[in-house]
Image (tube, rainbow, N blue to C red; front, side, top):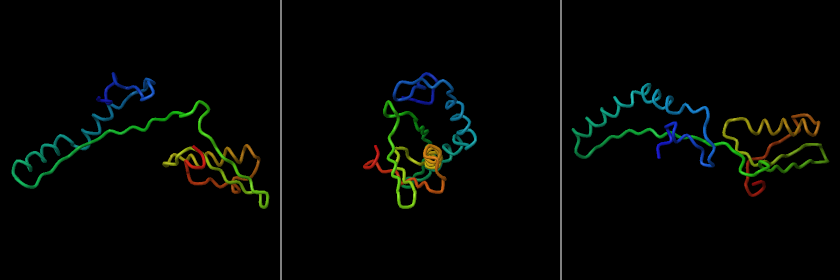
Length: 129
């Protein structure tokens, strides 16, 4: 199934992608990277060499975003009475989008405490699914 076409622009959970531009981006990426030229160079090399071969590939990858559970993911908030610090475990995965910072900000605002007292623990599915 080719997911780089508008006809197949549907998420795994059946949601159509309204603002789909992967087909245009994919075409531009291959053009900018001179993919066809490089593929031809690999073919020429492979014809000349019996034992050594070269290849090239490009794989589009998309990360879906949805809530796995009807109410989103969970969180475990530990408030330590000795110093007022807070440790938060949540079900999100930090992959550079800043979710740990956002969670810390929400907790600080909800509890009315300084952001410096909030520590977001590493994601652990044994603690919070």
